[in-house]
Length: 251
Image 1: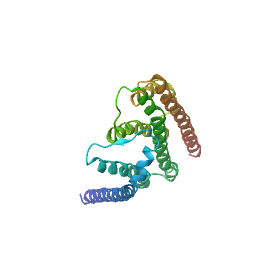
Image 2: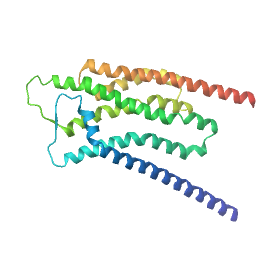
Image 3: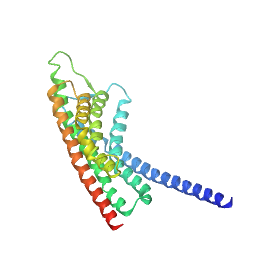
Image 4: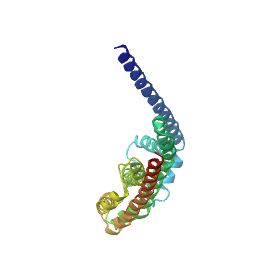
């Protein structure tokens, strides 16, 4: 009985220790988020002008509190983007004790990859929005209406376009990670390629105006991204098989 009690006590202490470490890492992430939010708040005018410099029209606000919303939105965007690599690092540090040295070495590059692909997705989505979507929507008016563009509707539409791209650009990292865990294989991705194409085309159509050419322009990079994911999954899969064969031979 005493042995079982001691085992339960050690198990409880380990759980408390893990929860305490998780709390500390979340606190670090929150502090970084608040610091970056403050920095974004200070430079909000520069950030705002960056987003509107390519527009051929002026954004308007309709309420006194809209200015506060502008500050919160711009500062929050900076904080989220800047905190992402910190959050990934804290998650990796939390699970690192349960990983082998090889797994630690293999998983560490995922942290900058997640951040860089997220930023690349945001950038691509922003280019599509400014260069394709906005001109298309403006061309529909043809002088029929007086145009008043409000800040809140503009940025809601902007984020509706760029955020899905930022998420979709994480597909290569996700596929490599799932392949390393043995959950996904390149053969399965090739087998389900046509269904993946359909899903990506639907997503592309959902975040772009109903223009066939524009939807094709958006869908093609997403399909190329899927093909790149298959290639990267194949690399991870072959390395995994090679390590397994070496282990069996040495055993």
